Each structure stands twice: as C-alpha cells, then as structure tokens.
Image (tube, rainbow, N blue to C red; front, side, top):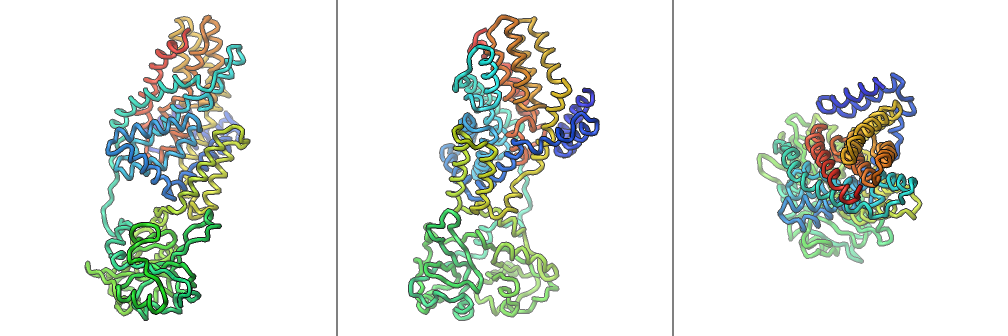
Length: 616
C-alpha cells in the first residue's frame, strides 16, 4: 500500500512540474509497481492490450484520414459559416455539437471525430486551437451524461438501482443532469480558456525553407501560362508516350501533369491518377496540364488533335489549378561546387537521371521560365523541380551538388486528397452507425479497427507508413502505462478504504454532507483510476449509505456517475483528455489550471441541484 501511494505522489509531482516527459514518468511509475511486486507483469502490461488503448490507436488513424482527405476542412467550413466572425459563437458551436454527438457515441469516438474538424476550423479562422481542444474533450464527457448509453458509469448506477429493487433508469433519465453539466461547463470554460489556454503561436522565420506549395506556384507564375489540353478520340497522341511526342524539344512546352479519371466502377477505390513520366502512354480523355505560350499551345493542338479546355477552365472548377496528390514541386539550391554548374538543363538531363522536371530557375531575384533546356546553370541558382514526392526527396542524397529546400515528404503529407473525402465520410459514417446501434453485433473497438484499415486500403491515407505517423505514441504510452495504477489502488485496498471511511464519517452529518462527501470522493478517485472502476467501487457504498440514513438513494448514485465522468483536472483520467493533449500542446498544469476549477464548481452545483431533481 505504501509503495503505491509514494509512487502515485511522486508521479503526480513530476507530471505537474513538466520537466520530464509524461510518457517516461508513466513508464517509470509502472516499473516501480512491477519491481516491488505490487502488480504482476500480466497486470502491469494489461494497459497496452486494453481495448480502450487499441481504440485510441485506431481513432488516431481515422482522425488522420479525415484530416488528410480534407473532410475535416469541409465540415469545419460549414460550421464556420454558422459562426461567422464571432469567436464566442464558434466556441459555443464546438461545445454544443460535441456534446450532442457525445450523448450517443462514446466520448473517445466523439473526440476522434471532432478533433481534426476543430483543428481545421481553428486554422481557417485564425483562432488558437488550444482554446478549443480542451473544451472539446470536456464537452464529449458532458454530452455523455445526457443518455443511458453515454458513459459506462450511467449503466452501472442504473444496474445498481435495479438490483436493489428501485427500478432501472430510462434512456433519458439523465437528460436534465446532462443539460446542467453542459450549461455549467460552457459558462465556466469560456473565461477559463481565455485566461489560461491562449498560447503564443510559434512563428518561424519566413524564408525559402518555409514556403508553401501555393506560394511557390504564385512566385514562379505557374498558373500564368497553364493550359489544359484534352486528348480527344482519334487524336494522334493516343497510344504514344510523352517521349515519343518530343513535345518539349519540338514545341518548347513543359508537360506538368497528365491527369486521368478512374473508371466509374472503380470510383470507390481511386478517382484520380496523376502521371508525369516520359514513358506514360496517353489514353483517350486524358487531360494534359502544360506550360507554354498561347502560340505554342495552338500549334501542338493542331498537330496532334488535342482540344484546349477553354484555356483556363478546369474540368471541376471555375479555373485551372495544380494539385499535388502524387506529384509535387520543391526548390533546389545549387552549390557553387556543384558538378552541374555551367551546364545546361538539357545536358544534365534531370528527367532521366533523377526522374524530375525543371520548371523554373530563380537567379538573383530574376525568374527564368522559358526555354530552360538551353539555359546554363550557375552556382546559387534555385531550381523549381517537379516530380513524384519520393523522387524529389531522393534529391537530398546529392548533398555535394545541391540542397533541397524544405521537407518534400512533409509537404506531401500536408496535401489534402480531397477527391477521397466522400470515401472517408462514408467510412466514418459506417463506423459511427456500428458504434451507436446495439443490434449490430460488432464491438466498438472492432468497428474502429475496421475503419482504420479501410482508410488505408481505400487510399484516404497515402500509405501504411502515413497511417503510423498519425498515431501519437507518447499519448498512447502515457495512457496505457497509467491504467494499471487504478488496478494497484484497487488491489491494495486504498480506493475502498478511503471511499468507505469518508462516506461513514460524513453520513453522521446529514444527507447533504454525505452527498458532497460521496461526490468529491468519487471525483478525487477518478483522477487516478478509470471512471468505470470508480463507479463500480462507489455505487454500492453510496447505496448502502443512503439506505442507512433512510433517504432516497437516487441522488447519491447520480452523484457517483457525474463525479466519475466529470474529471477534468488530469490528462490521463479519460481517453478524450489524453487525445487532445498533443494537438493542443498542453502541459499537465494546463489541465490543473482549467480543469480543477471546473471540476470543483461542477461538484458544488451538483450538490445543490441533485436534491432538487431527485428529492431525498
């Protein structure tokens, strides 16, 4: 017992100091419990196989796909329209939407669904996301209080009352209590988040290494001479490769991209393909994105029977644009000692040697965009190259010749695969349906895992590696390593001893004091052990205490479920709190500053309100 208490106190001190990584503190705490045989290895490692932890991993992947496909941005833009320019209105919409979903979907699933949407909204509106993400986590827990299935403690107290002969609670018996929780939480979080959670954004020095893809497109004026040519039926280009057509040398035109729409029957798995290599065989209905003068474009269309798409009218939008799903652009700075200096672009043959195309040269603030093949390169020149993202990244290996500015693979990860948004939306919707309806005999963790795998298989994420990168392993390790702590507190009898002692002492002072004692005992316990375990321990104690006093046990059991679920002062007390921690860049003390006042205030309000809703 003593070892467990000392370990818990020391871990809490390190968490609050923030000087040591939280996941390292959690692992060390777990090792102490194993070394002193408080827990067996099986018990100590049980957190890493817990279904909640596995679900969190899957939800990170699903959330990453929602963000990667641009679905988050689409949904976020709809909410932003409702919010207008009001930050307060946006805050309220996030709270109410999250709470509404949380009433029917697990709080973990709710946060995973809303997290990428809220981050996208914050980026679009210029609001600091740290002010919205912690309220998002808290609102998901508050929403769970509105229905019987919203959170496990609700089911536990309903079952406890039923077995004691008081009858079970109905689906919406919790609704009045849930509404009070949401009202109190919203009113308090509005000022608390402004005071404690508006962090200064990190602003890097703007330079070539920080240029976005849109900035590069504008800087090199790629859209100024961008034309799209459709390969018509009977065109002389059908069945021939780009190399065979010799377009660049014969016409002085750069082919930036060949875009091909997938066949309708395969629309679910793939809708857009991008090509750029010389050995690409052209097919009917291909669309060529080319850069050149109107005269050059007119000549090639006449020779090969190509159809210009009205100059600058996209097949999907009102204007021609470049997308970077599979192929991208980046700047390359030539070293003075480079072997390519004083050689022409044509001589170096970037296309064959490195599988990239040179679109432009920036030399002393002057941009060279035409007839690049005959242009000799100088030391200090910056080349704008285009190619497959992986091919651009491989250019970094030629360090003696040049430096690739920026991180191509990171830039690729930022490109939204917006043509996959409908697929991601369908997968997400099916996951939610399976989790909401009990008649579908699939466990929530299984539904999440299926959704995560489908996101990868259908291309909503670029690769399995990209899926792994969406997982925040620090959060997973923190949560999984701290879960056995609840088992240690329960196994050593600390939890039951404290809860029984407080309930007995306060019971002598009257029902209101007993209600307060039960509430804050459960509230304290759920900071260190799961809300489900807290409810299982406290529900029978609350029932027996109320029966001994001869009063109605319903308000006491409601105190247990509210206190168990409304835990905000710790990042590892609930999965939602842990999920938003990395995205919001929160420290342990951020939860204490915002969550502890809210947790205490929620308790005081409930002690006053519960006897009015369910009289003693």
